[in-house]
Image (cartoon, rainbow, N blue to C red):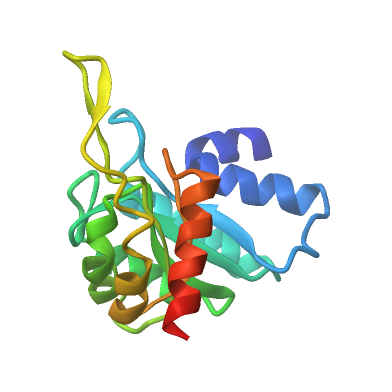
Length: 178
């Protein structure tokens, strides 16, 4: 049954099934994040494979965004393999990464390998210091937008701890480039 299937396939696929059932397919693009956040869930490559199969059945444009560290998923799997699987689905209009370090844009572009336009919306770049119970480092995301564009990113934004002010700073930075 569908609830069991959705639970087995993970949050991203469940969101797609729910969107289809709720007849929300009119959306211009459906963001499908395949981010493995718990070591107890299935391997990310299996999640991307299941998500791609579900997307292949829908008539909805979507992008697939992974949480990466360099050229690998957070589970250590090669990101380029996940992107290659997803690129086999015609309705997947973009591939990229979210909630990763702002410095990872070039690695993401390389892993996507020209298969689709690249989306990139990293975290702020700060790190949590559990001992001090405080965020440390600088919020580098807002200063990096121009570099992401030069690296090949075509849609960008921010994830964890990227504020509306930082998004506005990205917009200003991109405006200066044009």
